[in-house]
Image (cartoon, rainbow, N blue to C red; front, side):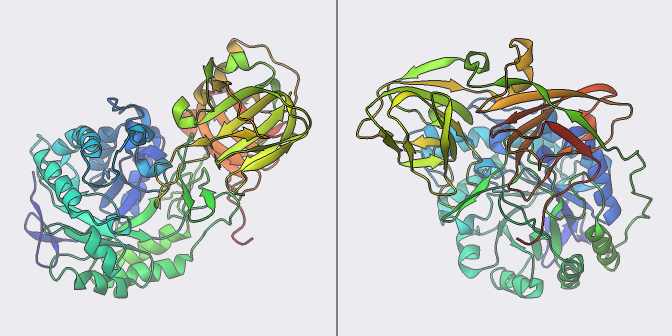
Length: 586
């Protein structure tokens, strides 16, 4: 057991000054079998602490559920940090942003009429209380201040909310959170984080709780602003932005290793503590990416490489070595072994086959339900669905609706009519005839994670009109994407055709190693290896490869499955040892 406290100008560990040199690792973006490797590399760069968010929606996809299996085993992750001799910072939100779907807030939360989000409202507080009780039950015995037979746990700090000053100013809500953390047994210091702007630091701060900043440049100036709002206590940048995230259709963001290292040096020279965001970004596996909408909807890509000191596959970059050199000027760093991978570099191809087309055999993809109005994806508790109705109108007709969230492929009697895209602000499309079977295949491309559009419903927002009429009956098929790799167990392949189509191919490995799957010859869709969802791909880029973690692979026969939403002109699957995250300029 140790004593950790906030001193007059420094953190104090057992009464002695302690500077936090932390790096962000999100356990939920890294395969569990690779946690120890990433943590050890943080130690080798000279860090003494690991920081992580906690994603409420991943742990609690339904109310009353708190999943800690596999990638979500927070306790095991924190124990891995302790085993490496490092400390930990836990940031459980409840809102985390993090370019993560819905900023970590569960979609079911917003289906409660009248719920008030991120404010002192009874329904919201009740749900937050349930969530934080589960998280803090894990964190409580792992605090550095706890006696657990091993001399205390790794957790030094716990953060309250996240950049709240950019969202609201409900001080009653923030104080309620502080009381909850303390009631649940959190005895280590609590912190808040905001961008170092006067209004944000005032609105997001809590008396008696240490304020920290988030920035990636002008470190000395930003620390001075932070000090203006906090005359005593240690200075800390809780998010030292060393890179940035990418969105589909944009460039791959990179930052200069030399300039980032100079900013880090200035920050440390000023005597501040730091959490490098990100030390290793990882991957938005599955359908977990967030999005931004500041007038134009921009979904985040699958890779969360972030141009960090460790790349998406956990390999040191130039930024790793530049940051290590800076840290060595301010604190001891351990000897650096050879970190270059020694596994063979594999590059090979396989041919996709055995197509199963959704519109050809939809019954094998899910169960039909009937509705007297067009449901949203939230009504269906889905991220991908087929909505069907029959039209009986004379001549051509215009289909129009309120809003598309986020993309819908339109078919009439299996003929492709076009795509309605939120990003393009599409709200109408011309049907060449008003009679026939109308199919709308609707995709949630990621919930907004920042700003006032957090929590909005997904799907087709009505009313939907065809001509002057509103279809009275709809059938829907919720498509469980996790079940796509199992389609061939109950369904015979079909001939290729229009509309979403699943393909698969085996490939053989003697000695599994990290791989990347090239996707630039395909259109838009999702990919799985051995049932593990690698995430989304899209020809528009910038990302042109999907990361395949070594633990997902096995010696012998492996299986790749893709679900392609556009026509597939090239059935070749290409595996490569290196990533291609796209051009840095467009």
